Structures are given as structure tokens and as C-alpha cells.
Length: 190
Image (cartoon, rainbow, N blue to C red; front, side, top):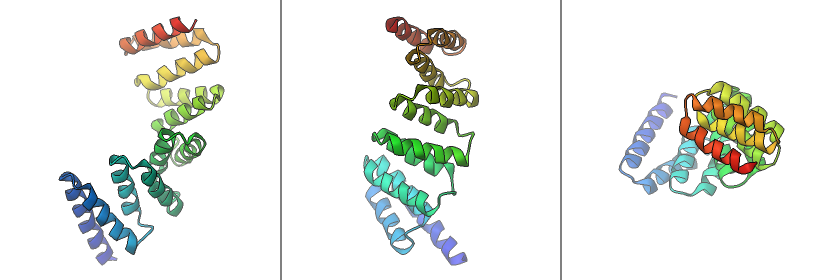
């Protein structure tokens, strides 16, 4: 066991050094080598996914993250969140919703996952569910304007302009620019 830990430590240092010097191809080769020996290694899978995403190869990043959550489904809510984030970004909304829900099953306080879930539900025109997810996001992150902004937009989609206006008033207290933008959009949507 000590030998594996030592080898993992060296691998981590090599990968960090490669990335620090912008040698992403080397980092990928190092991680590929580790995965050839241990195909289910969570460090190698998650980091190779990260490097692929950083290089713009999101399809391969999703493949690695799927392998990671398949091999280690209960390891980390962040693994599921990262997968969901990329799935949503790539337009795979149904799978993104499922992955956000897995993340939330592991960590119900993961505010980013509530926000992402809300966005996927909006894209599916499931506004009541989106409102509930975004409300939970704003409870967990009350000073972040993003959840509030999207929640106001959902209220407009649900034909609840008074609720959207209440959010504008609330946002004026700590994010006046976002409140002004939202007010313009709500006014234009009338």
C-alpha cells in the first residue's frame, strides 16, 4: 500500500508540474499511463477529465467523468457536478439533470448543483420545478445574484410578474446593477 501511495504522490507532482508549465500533452500522457495500469483510478480519471476540459476537449472530459462516477458513484458530489456541468454545456440536458440530482443526493447543500439543476429544468420548460431548485439555491447562497436573477426570469415565465418584481427589490439591496438589468428585462417582457 505504501508503494502505491508513493507512486501516486510522484504522479501528482509530475502532473502538477506539467500543468504549471503548460505542458498539457505531457499531463495527459502521464495520466494515460496511470490509467493503463489502474483504469478505475479516481485521481487519474478526474484529473484527465479536467485537463481535457481545459484543452477544450469536452467530449473526452465527459467520457472520463462518466467512467469516474460509474467506478466510484458515491465518492464525491463534485464528480457528479463536474459531469453535469459539462453535459449541460454540451446540450445533453436530460443527462445533466440526472447528474445534478446525483450530486444533490450526495450533498444536498451543494448550491451550484441546485443552480445547475434549475437551469436544466428551465431549458426543459419545467418552470415549477426550476423555481423550487432556484429557491433552494438562493437559500444556500443568498448574496449571489445568479440564482435570484434566474428565479425572477422563471417567475416571468410562470406569469408571476409581482414575484419577479419582489426579487428586483431584493436585489437592489446588494446587487443594484443586476437589479437594474432585470428590471429592464421585466419591463420589456410586459
